[in-house]
Length: 591
Image 1 (cartoon, rainbow, N blue to C red):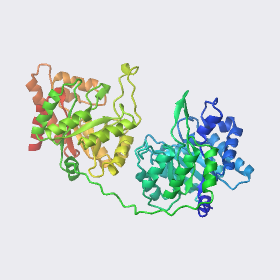
Image 2: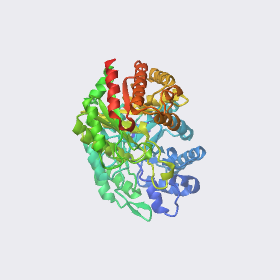
Image 3: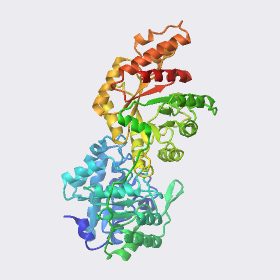
Image 4: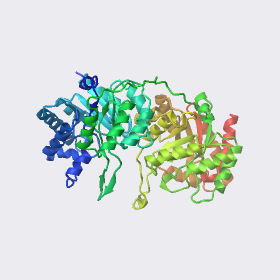
């Protein structure tokens, strides 16, 4: 039986309003999360459900938003809250004698590793809801889509008649914090077969929500749900307070219904007063006809010559430079001009490696690209920027002409500095790449950016490394820059990873320019293996010229051994010896 569709065949469906903010307004002394109130104060939750039912709500959501989030550590407690919240909502509806739908509510689902583990953690909660009789699920306030399809498939396998509501939280610009646009969401809702109802909730007040919905394109006639906040909050004594007007809210909901909403209700800041006015105004109103557009695939283009080279099998040359510690760019710009004269394909700029602050690689890169005419690929670390900062950095760099990025999680902040410097790590490199993938489909579609990842190939479990590479490739990663390669074991490992993943690998080559340099790299650089036979090629008595001759021979030998595996060569410049790198590249080209 499809309860939602049966109701929507006759009229607009009115949901309840906020649980969390309304509970806080009634019981300000309870500082715990509201979901625990189902265990500690069940009568309070039943009273709120009753108020919404009496206000005219036909869909009542369980007080269980946080069962998917980090606020409840214990699986046992999550299951207990799921069971109790459902039974309380069901009991309240039965006691009211009203024909309401009880809906199992699950809040923001976040799979930080993007490896599917979120389904494993949610299965006990979903099973608990199903055991209690849940036939309607509401996945609200979502920010991204990773892991959702598996969850929905699991529910449908358990109960093919279950109905699934999916709604996303957006900001005033029409974006989720995970980088999804309104159009991304409209398309996802249309194509996800196991989603019965889709739409938006939270994030914005009714006015901005109406503006965003009125501009949205519909690609399906599936029921569409919209639940805006009452307005925008202010903070008083650490609590968020909403002062929305229920009459204004109702007027904006009218516009939202006209734009295509079939199910309407309220999110943060709303109360039974808001729902009562919606019910009086729209209780007998029938849904509007939607204007369905064909969900044609967007045309996107990539003009990058570097990308075309690696796709065609031509091996490009990448050279890394380090931005300065101070404001003097003379040396690094001179190096860039030397590389440009040598005809290298792309310059890449590191992003404060080892957690030591250097000049911003994106700002420097834009200037360098403009002055030299060579494409520049800044590294962008998740360590130093939150989600807002990462997205803003990509947008700003794009406007400045940058089209290539190396997306990395970032080295940790040195232990001695952690009392003063706070690492961010809102995202890891995989999630960052997902953001870039979404931007390529939207803001960058006319000239897509090309981005790669770093490859630390030395871990014990090669298959685990390959799996992580594959996850990055699924998010649009076009290539990998490896750590410096020195030994035959390194080459064999990279060949294995390439065979497992089909990845484009830019083999890292860092010439060792002295005996001291060789010893340091062999003994003090984590994750880098320099065989003793290479160290033995150097001696303390060598002149600079003699050591560089050894460096050239070793680098050419590595490049030759890597020619079947490498899709390009990535050079790290020791001590700013750019002319040495140009010499090595010239000899590789001659072979």
